[in-house]
Image (cartoon, rainbow, N blue to C red; front, top):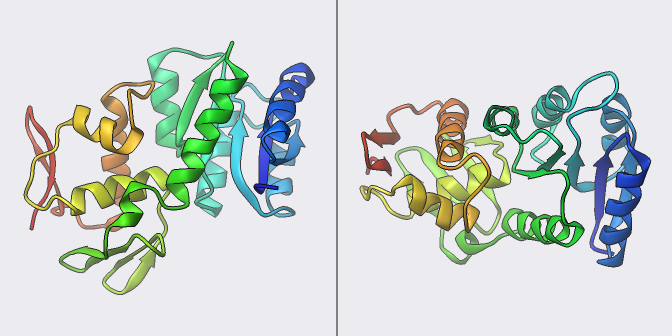
Length: 223
């Protein structure tokens, strides 16, 4: 088994389809029909990733995402029929790592799950040594970040974005280049995705001067 995936989906046909494909790839699958049940199941199982619908009974998926993110850095993939940019951005701002629109390809969904887990388990950035800027220290092997010696919990995407920026101190990286390096392709929501994650990094690191915006060009870490 490759670990447990929590599928939060109230439509049984969709849940059955997702579970079947994930199990075929060796994942254990935990199914929750509502946001409330999802929050309970997360405390019962060592979940590696969450596949989360937005249109849930009771607490909606955006609120579930925010509550999950407040408790854990477990990767979250939103699976939703809502395909407007505002919904995709809202999902990112709530803490999601990826966003897949229904109707969807089950094979693509599984491929995205695997890609997220590769990154969260140590992807491109893990091949590098420890990185630092000021009192911000990142250890790719341990997937850990410390600010002033205190640990800071980041999502998989936030960690990889910070790793790429720290590995290029003083170098301006465009949003498109960051999408290529961190998301390995275009992410739903386009370059706005990068802006959202940079804003989240600034808030969590509490070092507003570390990640500089270069107007019309992109972002860089100030050495």
